[in-house]
Amino acid sequence: MFNYLSILIGIFYIALGVFVMVYKFFLIPLEGITSHLLGGLLIIYGVFRIGRAIYYIRKKEEDV
Image (cartoon, rainbow, N blue to C red; front, top):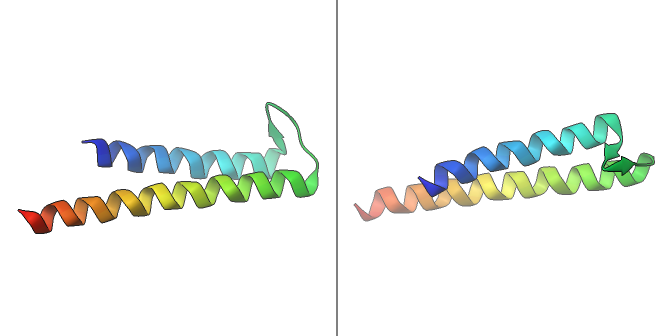
């Protein structure tokens, strides 16, 4: 259950990263390069969370 929730949270981080890059806003207005760096970092973290969750789901299925 936790791994599936982690996938959902990863999708949320990716969506938040895209939002920050497009609207240049994250609690305060951001300038061009700052919004792209923060948005990219959020997207990378979201992909990391999804990848880690998929790894643990596959590992759990192999152990059974």
